[in-house]
Length: 236
Image (cartoon, rainbow, N blue to C red; front, side, top):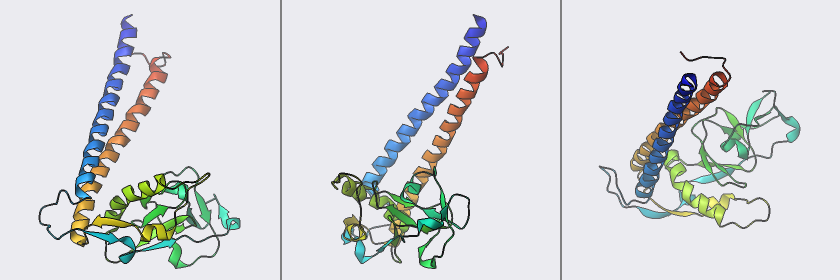
């Protein structure tokens, strides 16, 4: 019974760590959500900025580039050629494809580029997975006058509203005109845009760090259970 109690206590301690981390992550996400509601609507201004916010048609300051219809005969999963960005790649890396056919530089994507899924989930994504090719049904925001990280955050809500408001019997589709015709209330001050994006990005980084830590604790618990509940490791 004493050994049973020691084993149970060890696993209970890890459960407590996991539960506390889950609560902290939920709290941080709520704080970030509140910050987005304040900072992305102009209700709260960061120190040093006072220029008025305006309703702006996105197409007046950016262009939406659609991906190219690359031939599937040149697709492969053997790391031959350049990575190909499919819609699913904006949220996972479960099936990575490469393209070893011909392409033009216009469709090369670099880290920091702002992409938007055009099928199913209309999600914005700041690409950070290395040089790749912009495939069809994935779009890219092109602008010389606005902050891409700021546009990433400010596009989340209208894209979600567009997705929820789009009726479809199979897969929902987004066009380049849908994005360029969006009107959003925003600051056109590039410095204020950058400052807002930095605040929200720091919050995202903190949340991602905590989620990585949580995943490690969950893996640790599985390993402890496999060892302690089978007698492979004995507590003394």
